[in-house]
Length: 248
Image 1 (cartoon, rainbow, N blue to C red):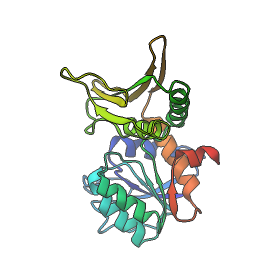
Image 2: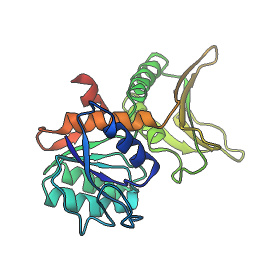
Image 3: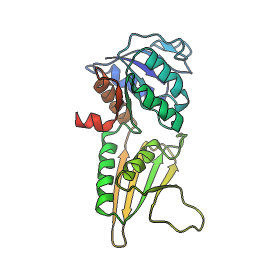
Image 4: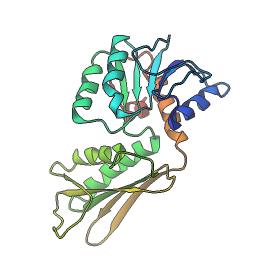
């Protein structure tokens, strides 16, 4: 599998490169795209997609959501499958992602951890089991993460909303307003070098269920992205998620 790696010089780009360099990986980075490219890279790296040129089977993106439009234009224009592993997209950018998926196979997930996919399913089941419970989501990440709340926390909320139709998103909590039954609170913590912790707290008057996933290393997201890339090769145009990967 030949990969064009967007965001190659970032932390997650480096993790993808290291995984592909392992013997027997079956994957090769044939080129990269990164705004910080300076010509010193051992793998050819372009500063933008405007000049990018590579014989690749799939694109893996770990860059920044501000580059979404440019990335989608390149992927669609070259009919190249895309694993979009960057979060923080606006609603208009998400609409463009949906539109692009009608022309190319596109894998888009807020989190590339199989454990998170399992957490989401357990959270939905717990919310169904306790329909009157209060629910809060707490996510913790390293102090360099720029978007808050995390895309994963928002994905958990959207999944819960499928079983709590009247759920209302409450970002943070301050002031003297009383909590409403429809609210699902989402709280973001930024500190240290924490790879990622997501907790879903479901509480009734008599008991509390806490579901927690903790990433010990951000390398797990690189592993998930590579698994998604392998899954995507040969697929028909469409928008694919971690649930599709798990089911296959």
